[in-house]
Length: 231
Image (cartoon, rainbow, N blue to C red; front, side, top):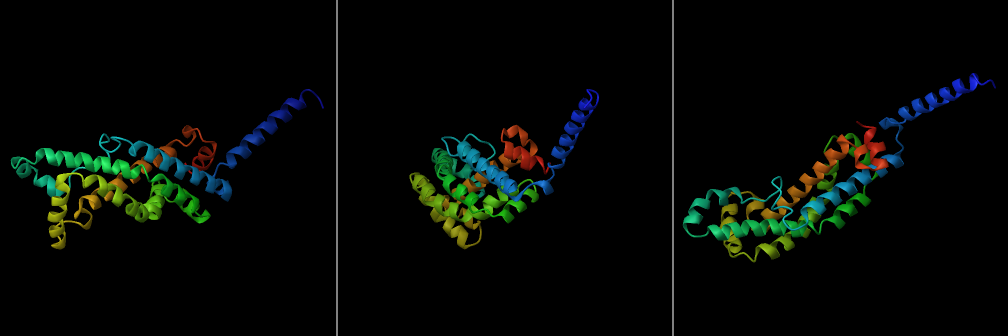
């Protein structure tokens, strides 16, 4: 083969390889194995990051996006409560609520990762094509009920140590039976448990959006391949 033909042949092979590689980057070209692996990696990453951020001291308290405030009904009564000398107790209750959420979320990882293990190929496809929060939606659907059951006693153990907790529960129980407040506000522990779940899924959603926006930047080859194919 002449020295003139060889460079042209080599260049042609390189170009063919580049075209083939580019063609393999569409969603249709992903194997079920790669798609499932990529989604599982995204799920695991989202769960791990969220628990690491929130399940630590001040993880909720110092995060404006998820900090747990007082229920609206209590917030409205704050001026009166302060006049009654209860301001400090209320502030302590709010702090304990956030610390209770942090303690509960710290225990969430096993349940979240178990949900990942049970994910089907069909789940993976739905997550890939379901929009920018489909990872978070999957977690919420699969884990909200068991996590709520797990969080509740952890939260109650912490919030019960505040003297206003029992008074709040008594007052809100009466309000709840009259339909004046939502079911998740009738006790401190129910309120905090729901807000802890909301905070957890909020941070998972943030991580999911970051992965979808820049899959290559995650440093994971499978995330780059799979989520890069749907950009």
